[in-house]
Length: 443
View 1 (tube, rainbow, N blue to C red):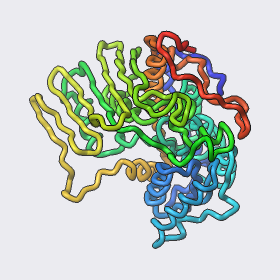
View 2: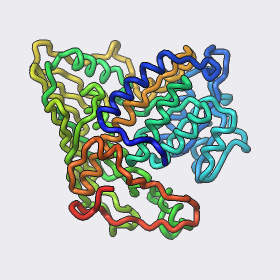
View 3: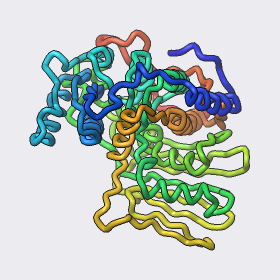
């Protein structure tokens, strides 16, 4: 997927900082389009599923002079359903949806056709296994990018995205992530206080992502799909090469907040356990080969430890919480804006919205700030933090699958490229066995 040299953790941190400094001194005004509101921005959208439909609406709401110009999907029915939804949402402003029939691209190469259709911004919301390929193509073509989380599902993919992020800085292109909690005002205020010393020195971090089982596209099965690839794409959540497993696809939100607490310094290593207890059916069947629970311990060079627990099992306790322990206090947070408090501190604090009717919607803010930055000629690039968060989740899965302690360097330099070679509709694509710690090899 890439030919990058294999960096160690210190080189990774050093190169990220150097790239940011260099980017601030480079200007490519010819590639910064639509600085003025009078210039219309054309949006190309790749991956027309449920979250993608939400992202498309939020992008169209974020700026008064944007239009949806092209769509790309491997399945035409998903394009039709998502556009029907959007047309209903924009019935009072139908000009926002300007997707001609000839710009509804279908197939494994649909992403490239969207990129080549004359768009300015590309929304990438497919299953995350495709994210590195799509980000690279969009940046190479000089397009601004919004990418849903996670940004990769394996080490080679993470390196590819890191290379694309650096190239985007050189080209002065926006790269904005879908780690939604980074974009909420409540979390921003809380983590700013933590970084300013409200808790003293951080000693430990705890996060949970306990939820019910996720049933994606239940109507699709072996009987009504024609090939291995179609079946797996229809039920992408249950295959590691497409989703990265649920700790990478879903619980990565909690892991991202753990990284945020550490001011985006990645951990030195991770030990993770996990397994598959309650997925219905036989492994390798309709529910693929992914796990249903994980427990991870991250270690930083400073001595800080982070503990993450996630589970997808129905009829079990559910919670999505963050607790940060410091020498002077404790922070407790809960996703969804329900609770953001600093307790046991000399300066206790609780987040309060500025007005009773204030809506703290990170899904909207991430797009609003992206388009405002493009208009200002100073495109946002959150690429370094988004790939660190993705790789943190990947290294936990690697540890759980193999039973080994995985260092940051091991994860980043892993040779396990899960993306199928010479991908085609008729290819044979057997489902790997459920990983067995102590037997599954680290690659």
